[in-house]
Amino acid sequence: MDFLGIDIGGSGIKGAPVDVKEGKLTAERHRIETPVPSVPEAVAEVVAQIGQHFKWQGPIGCTFPAVIKNGVAYSAANVDPSWIGTNGEQLIAQKTGQQVVLLNDADAAGIAEIEFGAGKGRAGVVILLTFGTGIGSAIFVDGKLVPNTEFGHMEVRGKDGEHRAAARIREEEVLTWKKWGKRVNEFLNRMEVLFSPDLFIIGGGVSKKHADFFKFLKTRAEIVPAKMLNEAGIIGAAMAAAQRFK
Ligand code: BGC
Image 1: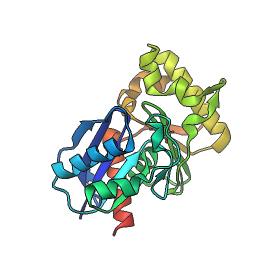
Image 2: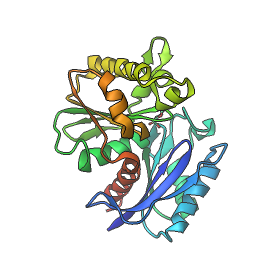
Image 3: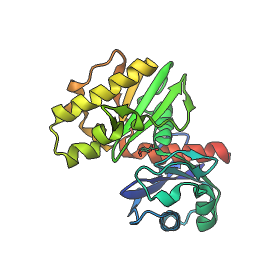
């Protein structure tokens, strides 16, 4: 059975039906720009438009770039602050008329990578980090997720970690791969001191270019690029819907 997965990001909202047994999209993904400002009503409206595009009737899984507990956003680092305290799950369910599960974007990407991608079959402590507008995180112990970790906000050199090492910062500050790679390495080393993971999975759009910066990364743990790239969020969201509404 297919479930609709939708990935809400800072710049785009993307969705597609997913075969959750295979971990594959079953139709071409549909993308609409994230509204500005990214207030809850407007974002939920775009999610509904994506549902309509697929004439979707059935459960929907949705990612969001914030801490999400029981459908409610508890943070809003890169989205409109009015999200804090909003029950996004309820709002999107009203707008779409479907059952909805809302979860953190990096957690969703991690769920997909652990089941079908770079973390498949890996026991122990696995940390997935997504480098994009911010830094998202997901930590797994023998395949089981600890939800809503926010490692991207770990302080590094007196700054929010994602303000030094997110992929967006490389572009904004026009950093060389080497300079940015060293910042990412410092971030990974701090993570390693705290958690001693067995594997780091590096995700986000920039993971496509891993050859440009992996040479600057050195940890005791193995470091691998994510396999599912920009589909991980959609697939993980659909998997979360399948779990909740099976
Ligand atoms: C947010 C996280 C999110 C990450 C990636 C951070 O700024 O606090 O919740 O997972 O960005 O989007």
